[in-house]
Amino acid sequence: MPEEDCLFCRIVGRFVPAQIIAENDRFLAFNDINPQAPTHVLIVPKRHVATIAELTSETAPLMGEAVVLANGIARQTGIAEQGYRLVLNCGSGAGQSVFHVHLHLLGGRPMRWPPG
Ligand code: AMP
Ligand code: ZN
View (cartoon, helix red, strand yellow):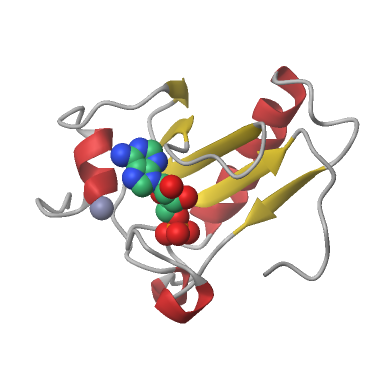
Protein backbone atom coordinates (compact mmCIF):
# COMPACT_ATOMS: atom_id res chain seq x y z
CA MET A 1 0.00 0.00 0.00
CA PRO A 2 1.27 3.51 -0.79
CA GLU A 3 2.13 5.56 2.28
CA GLU A 4 0.68 9.08 2.39
CA ASP A 5 3.73 10.61 3.99
CA CYS A 6 6.27 8.80 1.79
CA LEU A 7 7.90 11.08 -0.79
CA PHE A 8 8.52 8.31 -3.32
CA CYS A 9 4.97 6.95 -3.00
CA ARG A 10 3.83 10.51 -3.73
CA ILE A 11 6.09 10.70 -6.80
CA VAL A 12 4.85 7.28 -7.98
CA GLY A 13 1.26 8.56 -7.53
CA ARG A 14 2.14 11.76 -9.48
CA PHE A 15 1.29 13.96 -6.48
CA VAL A 16 4.87 15.27 -6.55
CA PRO A 17 6.55 16.02 -9.90
CA ALA A 18 9.75 14.34 -11.06
CA GLN A 19 11.76 14.05 -14.28
CA ILE A 20 10.68 10.57 -15.27
CA ILE A 21 13.12 8.47 -17.26
CA ALA A 22 11.29 5.13 -17.45
CA GLU A 23 8.17 3.42 -16.16
CA ASN A 24 6.57 0.03 -16.18
CA ASP A 25 3.94 -1.75 -14.06
CA ARG A 26 6.26 -2.20 -11.12
CA PHE A 27 8.81 0.65 -11.32
CA LEU A 28 9.30 4.32 -11.85
CA ALA A 29 12.75 5.69 -12.67
CA PHE A 30 13.42 9.42 -12.36
CA ASN A 31 16.31 11.86 -12.10
CA ASP A 32 17.67 12.54 -8.63
CA ILE A 33 16.85 16.10 -7.59
CA ASN A 34 20.38 16.55 -6.18
CA PRO A 35 22.55 14.67 -8.69
CA GLN A 36 25.92 13.36 -7.52
CA ALA A 37 27.11 12.55 -11.05
CA PRO A 38 26.21 13.67 -14.61
CA THR A 39 23.77 10.75 -14.69
CA HIS A 40 21.99 10.08 -11.39
CA VAL A 41 18.74 8.17 -11.75
CA LEU A 42 16.67 6.57 -9.00
CA ILE A 43 14.95 3.27 -9.79
CA VAL A 44 11.99 3.00 -7.45
CA PRO A 45 9.63 0.04 -7.05
CA LYS A 46 6.02 1.24 -6.98
CA ARG A 47 5.40 -1.06 -4.05
CA HIS A 48 6.30 0.58 -0.73
CA VAL A 49 9.04 -1.20 1.20
CA ALA A 50 10.87 1.11 3.63
CA THR A 51 14.40 -0.31 3.57
CA ILE A 52 16.44 -3.01 1.90
CA ALA A 53 16.63 -4.69 5.32
CA GLU A 54 12.87 -5.29 5.17
CA LEU A 55 12.98 -7.18 1.88
CA THR A 56 11.74 -10.76 2.05
CA SER A 57 12.08 -13.68 -0.32
CA GLU A 58 8.79 -12.46 -1.81
CA THR A 59 9.85 -8.83 -2.39
CA ALA A 60 13.64 -9.17 -2.91
CA PRO A 61 13.33 -10.19 -6.59
CA LEU A 62 12.10 -6.64 -7.22
CA MET A 63 15.64 -5.41 -6.69
CA GLY A 64 17.02 -7.81 -9.27
CA GLU A 65 14.51 -6.37 -11.69
CA ALA A 66 15.63 -2.88 -10.64
CA VAL A 67 19.21 -3.79 -11.62
CA VAL A 68 18.06 -4.94 -15.06
CA LEU A 69 16.19 -1.64 -15.52
CA ALA A 70 19.25 0.31 -14.38
CA ASN A 71 21.42 -1.56 -16.89
CA GLY A 72 19.04 -0.57 -19.67
CA ILE A 73 19.01 3.09 -18.58
CA ALA A 74 22.83 3.03 -18.40
CA ARG A 75 22.97 1.84 -22.00
CA GLN A 76 20.37 4.38 -23.16
CA THR A 77 22.14 7.30 -21.48
CA GLY A 78 25.52 6.31 -22.88
CA ILE A 79 27.30 5.66 -19.58
CA ALA A 80 27.42 1.87 -19.81
CA GLU A 81 30.71 1.56 -21.64
CA GLN A 82 32.74 3.66 -19.20
CA GLY A 83 31.19 1.95 -16.18
CA TYR A 84 28.58 3.00 -13.64
CA ARG A 85 27.75 2.52 -10.02
CA LEU A 86 24.60 1.10 -8.45
CA VAL A 87 24.01 2.06 -4.82
CA LEU A 88 21.56 0.86 -2.18
CA ASN A 89 21.72 2.86 1.06
CA CYS A 90 20.19 0.98 3.98
CA GLY A 91 19.40 3.00 7.11
CA SER A 92 20.22 6.58 8.08
CA GLY A 93 23.79 5.71 9.14
CA ALA A 94 24.46 4.57 5.58
CA GLY A 95 22.96 7.73 4.10
CA GLN A 96 19.39 6.61 3.46
CA SER A 97 17.19 9.71 3.59
CA VAL A 98 14.02 8.48 1.84
CA PHE A 99 12.55 5.40 3.46
CA HIS A 100 11.16 3.73 0.36
CA VAL A 101 13.68 1.42 -1.27
CA HIS A 102 15.43 2.74 -4.36
CA LEU A 103 18.45 1.91 -6.44
CA HIS A 104 20.79 4.75 -7.36
CA LEU A 105 22.31 4.64 -10.86
CA LEU A 106 25.36 6.92 -11.03
CA GLY A 107 27.65 7.47 -13.97
CA GLY A 108 29.23 9.83 -16.42
CA ARG A 109 32.31 10.54 -14.32
CA PRO A 110 35.12 8.47 -12.78
CA MET A 111 34.03 6.81 -9.52
CA ARG A 112 36.32 6.57 -6.50
CA TRP A 113 36.59 3.81 -3.97
CA PRO A 114 35.95 3.59 -1.05
CA PRO A 115 32.77 5.70 -1.21
CA GLY A 116 32.38 8.36 1.49
P1 AMP B 1 18.95 8.02 -0.17
O1 AMP B 1 19.77 9.10 0.51
O2 AMP B 1 19.71 6.81 -0.57
O3 AMP B 1 17.70 7.71 0.65
O4 AMP B 1 18.48 8.66 -1.54
C1 AMP B 1 17.40 9.54 -1.63
C2 AMP B 1 17.65 10.38 -2.84
O5 AMP B 1 16.43 11.02 -3.17
C3 AMP B 1 18.69 11.48 -2.63
O6 AMP B 1 19.76 11.28 -3.54
C4 AMP B 1 17.91 12.76 -2.92
O7 AMP B 1 18.67 13.73 -3.61
C5 AMP B 1 16.74 12.26 -3.74
N1 AMP B 1 15.54 13.06 -3.69
C6 AMP B 1 15.00 13.68 -2.60
N2 AMP B 1 13.87 14.31 -2.95
C7 AMP B 1 13.70 14.10 -4.28
C8 AMP B 1 12.72 14.51 -5.24
N3 AMP B 1 11.65 15.27 -4.90
N4 AMP B 1 12.87 14.12 -6.52
C9 AMP B 1 13.94 13.38 -6.90
N5 AMP B 1 14.89 12.94 -6.04
C10 AMP B 1 14.77 13.31 -4.75
ZN1 ZN C 1 6.71 4.75 -0.26
